[in-house]
Image (tube, rainbow, N blue to C red):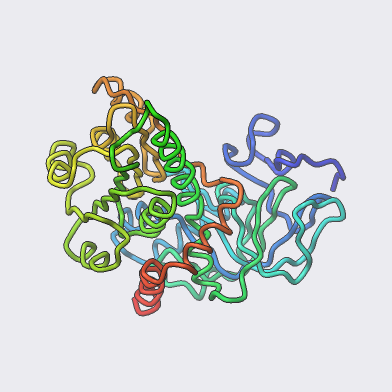
Length: 362
């Protein structure tokens, strides 16, 4: 192998060569031999992102064997786990097997880590045929290896949380960090004499408030000073999950894909918000999210099911003066902040642990 490598992983791109970064590439080189600035991880668990798993589940009508077979085919063909429909991947936990002498990631062989970069850009090889996975959940026991580049990100797993819980939290840790930053921006402006976004402080609507990224976003919003926090959920079962937790000040049952229905539902709890956070893994939520947002407000799209052309053109067609942000999954300190929220809020930790229990018994 050549000793010349790119910190962005361009040297691992097999197709198209010299034309793209690893995320946009169709095929990566997953060979276990590392360049001097790389790190090799022995895989323990993959965590498929929600939009990707939903697409695979729906395509195969819940047939776990077919889902497993397609995941193996994707990784085998592409050298990474990137759903060809959603373009998204997920993340993994594992043990550091080898660290190149020029690596700047601060990792040591033997460290148990969670990667904080998408599987859609991570060179990956699976060696066990996913024999321990039934295909019926996002959490995938696996053996094989993954490669981190010079500019990749990984976090050592904490000792006080189970690896499964830490993985679930770190998988969505970009959401609460960006929500916190955005809410604090509104709160700072509200303290000025002329630019209060709402009388009682920033307000937040979270589409998919009972899910992983949604519930953590609600906690982060409260931590950052949001007063009205509206969780939009799809049915009574999800509403019951939030009942009595204090994570939201209001819980609304509505179809996040129905713009008029969502608008009418939000009118009963104070109307549009300064910040709308989209955390649902279905398509068609772009225009409803825009209508859920006050003039001059902000929409954060965390769902990989988002059609960003529909979002941009929808805002134009609605003459909506809103700022739209792509939740890119990275904010400095995002993993530590999300773990801090889990440790400090028993209600949201209970939601996450309940989800783990449900997956274990599925």
